[in-house]
Length: 357
Image (cartoon, rainbow, N blue to C red; front, side, top):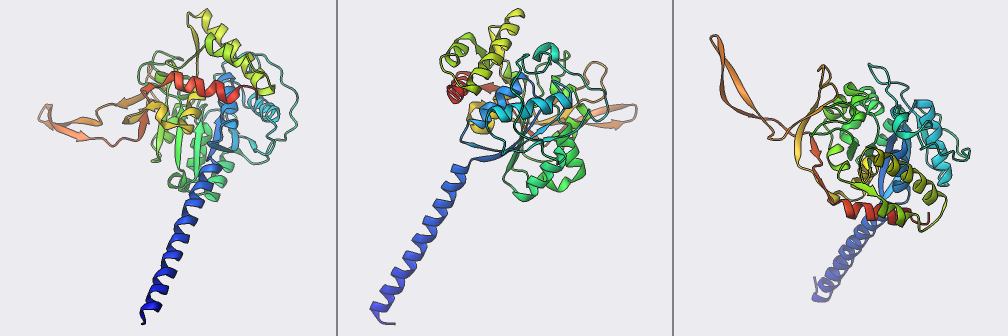
């Protein structure tokens, strides 16, 4: 081949390679601009309300659906709350689907004591312009995961009933889910009982299914939620601007801050919003890998998330009338467990995203 032809061929190849690289970069930028695809499974709920509005006002997230689970309120009340909030945010494009009506094996425990009679701090939002999606919540999760394999992040901020039902009906979704970010659990004691956090306590069997499913899972529990307090300082910042969502969340947060003050706290723990925050920016927390099981039978410990901090257990071998420890066996981690949080950075993010909305 003449030298000129070789040069032309090289130039053509270089141009083709450059075009391929440019297209790859563009596609990556478009994917980033579109945001992380999330399904929020929720029991709305005051802190659920703050979590949902944070997600809807964060460009890093593409909220694909809300699925409703009973927990803070009944399934019926939760669905109504979700529809009214989506309507307030002018996001009727987002499907809102009803899911389970009760936990898998126990009676529901609702929390109007903490969330108000209607679950939304007794704030009456306008009637919803949005319509409920006809699909069953767990089925909608299954459908969306199959439609976008390896792209959907599940963010359950209530009891894990719907997620467990989806896994039980179609286990093939597990390797297709990008990640699961749960608000629930604790490795330092509970709030519903001495051992159990409320979301896990409301359906321990469902939680055990979800923790053992085998997907990438992050547990955003009481441990970090209790360190992330929305105080009057942040409340005042939120109150300096106005908009339908801003004003609603300011009222919700005011209710929660006043309630927390009655129990000696300087602010309200941002449990559910922090799970959304971790979906936005995982660097907000420190989350070492651990093996977590959910206690389903203990008289005093039902609903406890039992974390193996060493990821190892002693190997006991029977010798005659006793067991002898013969070594340590490795236990595979199944969750990242949040233990530390940059609370101020998260709270500033929350306030800035909602101001004036």
